[in-house]
Length: 176
Image 1 (tube, rainbow, N blue to C red):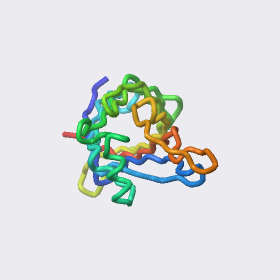
Image 2 (cartoon, rainbow, N blue to C red; image 1 turned 180 degrees about the vertical axis):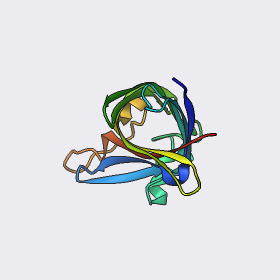
Image 3 (tube, rainbow, N blue to C red; image 1 turned 30 degrees about the horizontal axis):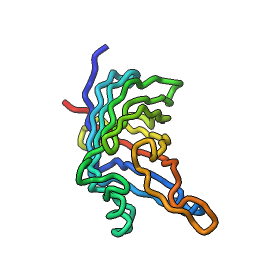
Image 4 (tube, rainbow, N blue to C red; image 1 turned 90 degrees about the vertical axis):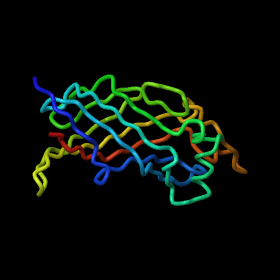
């Protein structure tokens, strides 16, 4: 089967994370600078996927919080400016659903992670570019990646939960 190269269309994609704060609300953040590529056949099964994000592009709509997230308490962006992901498998579960497994590297630590992936389809844009859309969902333990800062509330709850939800809406563009 012939394979094609696809580039991540950063203008039509978003990479987000969600974390519980004070046990009562969820804070959403994103990475604004990222890139990625995919090598795949027409059905995308067994695609080879790579991705990286600039940690300094983290955005939670609060400059003080963003600064704290870039500090050694969390991502330590000065020492570890990039997070990366490289797939190990991309298996089709049914018509439009896949399971993506790969190695995520944050703060110098690499762990295997799993994502549920929904394929939105393929279309040709008004300029003749072939595009494909996907939504990824997964969870990680931030402490497993060395993001261990925390404090306790008066009631003894964690200020920041350990579980981080990862959500990405990805549009790929087929390369010539």
